[in-house]
Every structure is written in structure tokens, then in C-alpha cells.
Length: 220
Image (cartoon, rainbow, N blue to C red):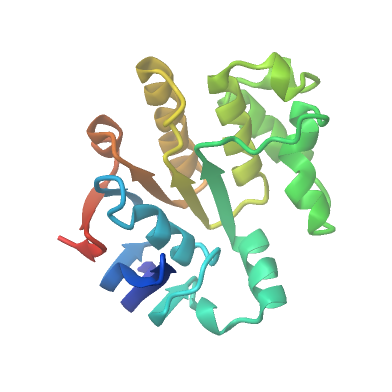
């Protein structure tokens, strides 16, 4: 059953007075519960596609249907709410709030949505991601791998149906990368979530259920 579909998605930027076509007629279907890796060289359009799939950017042309919703037709406010309730993001830069503890960083998206924190679920995430001993620590007291695990927990905290991860292991060493991706795969299966990972690392991509490749803005 499909959870994401793009139809003829194009994206054009103006750069230095010239038109640059970052995406060229991308047709992509992603199934519910799938772990998909999108690979390609730098500048191939991977991150642009991820941002469009996640509603962080709008296509110049084409349709983006996520969880039965044509997201490019939503107002800015409706799109923000849709993202918050359906999508979790994990970025290469962890984007943790320095003055907040690990626990506070994880639950902040729930509080922003005015919802009650599911303590049992958050504790389950902390156990799974090996963070229980770090709940009162602050980001500057954590290793890179620990900070990335906090970012994953934050992405999962709202129980999203889709997780988008943009080069989530880019700042990590090889062993920590494997640990983090392994944990992402475990959590996505355990909580029946769809996961889409952007990576240029073939070892990371091999952990996915399916790999698609972008070259010069087109799927190959």
C-alpha cells in the first residue's frame, strides 16, 4: 500500500541569473512500512527531493501525495500541522536545542502540538536508543552518536507515520553510523513506520529494503 507518491515532480532554481533544473520529472512510489534509500552523488538532487517529499519545499511542477494528502495544495499553516503530526525529520546536523535536556529536546514537538506526552512510549524509545542514562544531560555533554540518537528519538516522539533522514550518519564514524542506521531500522519496523534515507554511503544504503538512485535530478 503506497504512502508517498510523486507524479512528474520538477524543481527549478534561479542561480546566478541562470535557471537550474534540480529535479526532472520524478515519478516515485514509496510503500507503507518500507525502508527506502535514495542515493546519488553530491548535487544530484537528493536533498531537494527529500525536502519536497517532506513538505519543506514546493515543487515547480508535479504532484506530491503523502498519506493520502496532496501536500503542495495545503496552506502554509495546514502544511505545518500536517508535517508535525505525520512526519519526523532527522538531519545530518542534529539541530538540538543547547539549553534543553535530552528529555526536553525529545518531547518539545509533542508540546508544540499541545498534546499529552506518552511517558511509556518515550521511555520505550529511550530504552531502545540507549539514552535512559542521559535524560538529564545537555547536548554539549553527549558524543556525536548520542546526539544523533536524541535527534532520532525526537523524530519518533510524535509517532509519525513517515521518517525522513537526510545524511543522518554524515558526521559519524563508520561503527557509529552502522549503530545509528541499525537503530533507525529497528525502530521503523517496531513502530511500523516508513523510512526514507538520503545517503551517499553505499554501506548505509545496503541496509535499506530498496534503493533508488538520482543522477542529475532524474531517477535512474
